[in-house]
Amino acid sequence: MTPQRPGARELIGLVLEPGSFVSWDTPPDRDGVSPEYAAELDAAAERSGVDEAVLTGRGLIDGLPVAVVVGEFRFLGGSIGAATAARITAAVRRATAEGLPLIAAPASGGTRMQEGTPAFVEMVTISRAIVDHKAAALPYLVYLRHPTTGGVFASWGSLGHVTVAEPGALVGFLGPKVYEALNGQPFPTGVQLAENLVDKGVIDAVVPSEDLATVAARVLRLLHPHRRDGQGTLPAPPAPRWEPPADPGHAWTSVEITRSPRRPGVRELLRYAADEVMPLSGTGEGQADAGLMLALTSFGGHPCVLVGQDRRNQARQSMGPAALRSARRGMRLAEELGLPLVSVIDTPGADLSVTAEEGALAGEIARCIAEMTQLTVPSVALLLGQGCGGGALALLPARRVVVAEHGWLSPLPPEGASVIVHGTPDHAPEMTRRQRISAPELVEAGTAHRVIPETISPDEDPAAFCRDMAAALTAELRAQA
Image 1: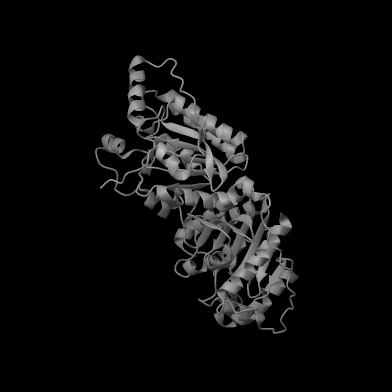
Image 2: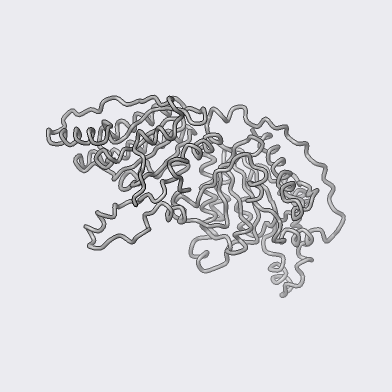
């Protein structure tokens, strides 16, 4: 049975607070429209109950003002004509001028064929307005509805900071009916399904329309300009006193401790210590790697973009080039939104395979380093556990680097370094001392700035460990605010 999907007015009623919607729309310009086309437009208006394929305006979500652009598929398949494009562009420009986050919820087959190329190129006009909106560090959220195809998906439908979709929505570049007519065979089933696009790292999540207001509120609590002022009200903890250990085997002890499968990682950090979390999926460009987690989040009331190496998933599959491309997406988001970047380093090493080599792993490490060094927003790197090789180096160049007491950083696994120097992995403990990989040595060398004591065993009390790490992050974020 085909699910009943809300139209434009119904979706506005679901998402915005009751009575808060104020329309920005004026009657569409029909100058020069042929009688035949005018009749089609009149019939579409009568059938759909709206005067164009989009409705625009402003309203409230969680008490916060937002602008909305909502498509109506029942009006000529949600197609975008010149008047439609003018309405969208005007709404985007107004949202930018008023400093409002923008939520777009298209449902469209793309360009209006009755108008052809003049309507088609208006996708550029809309996209230019969206780019200017984002350049003003204003959030742009996209909710792809069933169906969203063609020029809409290939322009303003794919430019969101956060992009989610209706369950089961058809989302793709070429509509399947057109593909079959042109090629004589159906398009493969499931490829253009919203759920598949999440798995492939094209969009971030699937969200039922009745839950969209809740998800949008979570994002707005992190990103809304009105909420950023005055955040971070928790007191910054004092810097703990750090006494370097006298044990000469401390570095190897740290390696063994951080290799424990029970040691908490980035997921536990978010679960136990973050205020709000909005996970994002993959690169947004068709790649995903479970070895890296990307999220919008906050610590101690300070919103940020987090890119974190996920130790649990790396135990199953080494971190590859797509993980670092996802990290670079996070860096771009931080820069676009004017938010701090937090990188969490916790990796036994990047993928060593033919696929990784051919996927430009080395180049992605280099590009991560380059982009992090060029960030204009505050940045903090947290060396939470293992910091092995180029995969760790890729997320290191933050303005401030803090290290858990047993965190460590090395160019290779100690066993690998031992093989190079001694021809056998048996000298790994010795190599950890020679290579100065431990937390206190990183601070002494100026590579890191602060060591966070592990006063409680992370294996025994992961929540307390994560709260200590988050307190340090909060202090660092506040210092750079």
